[in-house]
Amino acid sequence: MPNGLFAFEEGTGRARVVEDCIASLTQGGADLLWIETDTPNVDEIADMVAEIRAVVPNAKLTYNNSPSFNWTLNLRKQVRAQWLAEGRIAEADYLEGNDLMNPAFDDTDLGREADARLKGFQADISTRAGVFHNLITLPTFHLTAKSVDELSRGYFGEDKMLAYVASVQREEIRRGISAVKHQHEVGSDLGDTFKEMVAGNRALKAGGAANTMNQFAAE
Image (tube, rainbow, N blue to C red; front, side, top):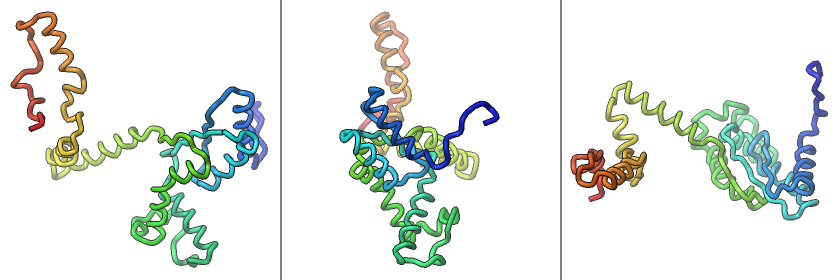
């Protein structure tokens, strides 16, 4: 290549993953594998692990249920392809490609089947591919972005303060989420305890009967 690097031969990606995993387990001292795939496909993951286990029978896998995948689109495409191959549907029954993301498909047989496979995805790869640990990288990044977007639309829209109270604080209280007492979460109680240790009754505490955090005390 012009930059001095060597390109891998086309179509060797899967074989190299299997080879690297076997080498890591047998020569590199690894006890747990991490495999990344292009799409969330149980068959693909299971087939690769089967090849690895043919050499290392006790191989265990960590799998990243990555937000980089378009999970909805991938699973709907897989269901559509399988049903077409089985003759259960015709080409015209469901659109192909990115059109499958259309909300109109949410409440169709295909949409429900894809969601059912999503629900069982982790159990399936654990059973069929020996996945030892399922994880999602950076889910909180996406959760924060979505939550802030929802709150901003309401707070700077028509609902104003109701947008925060209804979608955040009220839910925190009713679900018993401790973060509703954010002063406690960042250690205000510990600070008051330290002040009492040092100054006794003369301590100027952040807490006390007038502390707004007491509004969230359990009845």
